[in-house]
Image (cartoon, rainbow, N blue to C red; front, side, top):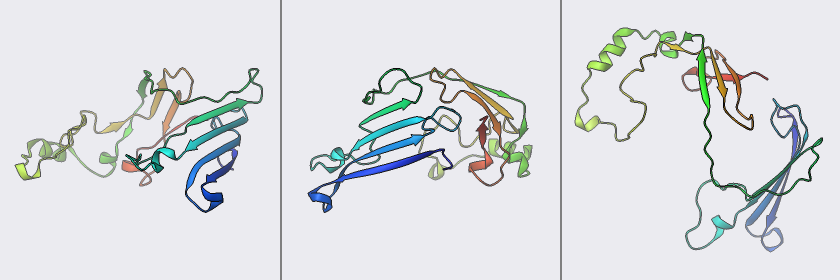
Length: 183
């Protein structure tokens, strides 16, 4: 109910239900395009577990849907099954507006901590084995503030576009960093 839709799941099993699950069909009815979208309709998803069941080189990890179909009630064209396409790249624009105190400032961390971290020399045995685009031993130059709002644009299908407001929820997510989009 919270997501504004009903979901029906049907599983297909080997040996008349006695064996392994080989596929599933999920059907969503209602607000299947997200709570922000007022349109209602249905969406169907087919997932085949064959890649995980094969004996040679079975797939491990999350299996994606094999096919999907969706339909809005006021849609003119006939719905048709879609096969997943190869990953596509899109360019999003993120713009921060306003400022709120970061989690570090709220916790009482001052310039002394940032300076001490800059001066700290790591011994070889404690070097971090991963390469990260975010240096783990340096504070970002804007470490004291976070944006109050983040405006996202550039999504041609309008799935993530919008203004996200800082929620201010403490101790609920990592570093209390939670922004929610306008409904």
